[in-house]
Length: 312
Image 1 (cartoon, rainbow, N blue to C red):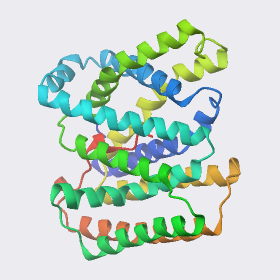
Image 2 (image 1 turned 135 degrees about the vertical axis):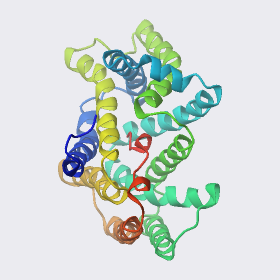
Image 3 (image 1 turned 180 degrees about the horizontal axis):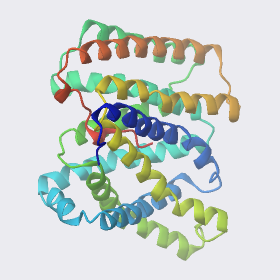
């Protein structure tokens, strides 16, 4: 789907991108509405209903032949199995963090994630770092260290979210499938275990599905809530340069930060202020570097793979 007027493509892309990141930024409010449901059970529902929603979408768009063609390669399915593991762990940690009062750490994790991805690129893909990127990574490391020293604890929620999503992106970088086909395969591979767990919970009476209309609707809606912003993101990156997407991505953790502090009343200490200050400075330098390099990148090479959007 493309705009008939090329001059409108950036504006439409920004609208799709902003919508996706704002949607992801509101996730804490959504998952907190299901706080009485254990995180593993919510994860199982998210997997199963994402499969239902995505399969229905592929059917509606009549894209089954194309989707099957993309997924029929054994190596592709093997890599998607690995990415499914990483994203499911990421989802589980995130849901637990939201419902356990750690949204501030979750937001920190998604601020750190781009810099973790850069480090993975260096050590695992042999990609060189610019001087500004080295400074940014150093500042981010100093921010995490400051939190460890001042608060006396390792921000394991933030680091786990950042690392699992960076690993997910690393695997998906090597898989040539579109966002819809990739998500369909990932949740399809996870669904047998998720469905078995839900059936067992229902059999033992420990499950929450159908316990109340509100909870049932929220659990069923996890499929649409997972897939819709991912599709908006895919539409955005078809129209935008890498630097623009890079700037938009900070809407998500910024909203989560605001929700944690102002809506959920999580304590923002001096240690947090120091750590976030270092990391925000690191992101400013990193973003400046991306924008500067993007100005010298040919338009055809300036896009971002639509499979690598946040899926918290």
